[in-house]
Length: 568
Image (tube, rainbow, N blue to C red; front, side):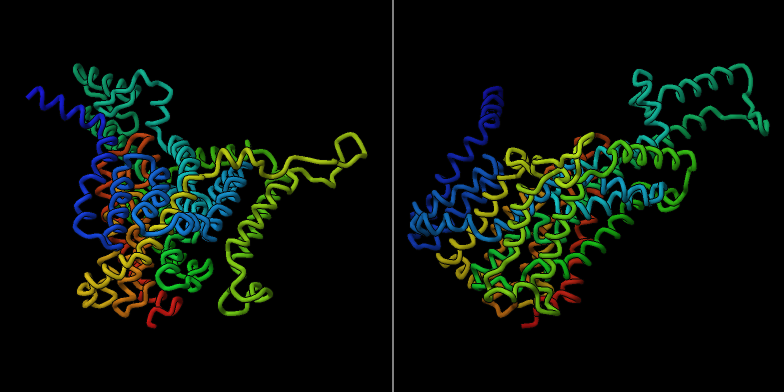
């Protein structure tokens, strides 16, 4: 028994090495039994799926394997695989990341967040809604992880202002009885009441009613329980809103950009999915999901009646904290305004390139040349050369104007803060899509699974949504999308269904990772602040998974059909 335990312990210690070495060996019969391109591509795909799912090595490192596997297996040549990593969609995302880094560098996102929170009421229900609105809005343009990392500390600080128990606990940490859940001073007061009742009844000064010491302890327990639930709601509202806001734009999360790449590989064109059409469909879905998430969190942790109830003293304390935090940022600087201007220009360029209902600015140029990535890189380039200080303003105490100033975004800052690993993740997704299509694997899967599409397209889309929303709890949403989208696009096309009818709900469902701390970085960040248990996420997130999946599929048939011409 001891040897078995030692062996298991050793295996667990070196589990990543074992997975990396054993996976290709275990899958070798697949290659030996069938020498076709389909089997070879499947071999490489499964190896990557195992490495991505288990995270035996970093996701970005696994994403480099197509450059090794597919040329060695004879599926694609090295040039073809490498070109997949430099698709224009990759540069669309990198351009968006550059703008996001500039916003973070100038603390503009914090100013926007606090300004919006100042306009929202201080009652628990409105505070939750305010945090969710701000987080979702920011995560549409900035990475979900960065948004959550900024918003969670603010949420915890606001919670401290709303919580009497937390405030006292912070001041007197040595007096906290963790097991009982009582803070020191209140616990002492209850003890004094208990001592006094040993000799006489303690009366209330206002109405001479007898105070029951057990009721005193019960009230404190109830109060502490409510305080803990409020903290849970505050943490989860930020992480959930980041996930929900992330799918509202094409650049909100990398998984969204896998879709046009897969569509291009399978169908030869991804023109139907651009920034405008995606937002036209996904923003309403995101708003309704956000609203129902807000209601569900109140029901689950706070209760509607308590959430609407106000406490003037606490409300004033919350408002004072938010105003004070905003004032500490100081006056708006030229650099902040310049970054905001760049962001607004980029959004306008994206929205007016091809607005659908009128001709966009892309018509000025030869057809098909201008993409959303063009706008992203243009604005990103400007950030590296645009001055961060007003060049026309005279230097203090002189009549001379400023000759030069640092740019809004320094290259060293971009090198340090841009999530370069996403570049490889997206590239691997595009490389897998091309390999699956060129080898015939997607066609083979389409033939094999064609029986599944005998059901109605709406029912098939719903089942796929549920499956992927549960699967993405355990795997990266980018890797999930990379593995399944090429196959699903071909399966739909093979069955006479518009590929987007299946691919859109499949893509967005990859963002419905609400039930586990490891599901997404936002969940992990919220969980790391304490107060949450895994069972809290599971009991809250699973319900939310199904709520969001049904909302998504409802909108798919309501607005998705006319926006993407899904009836064709």
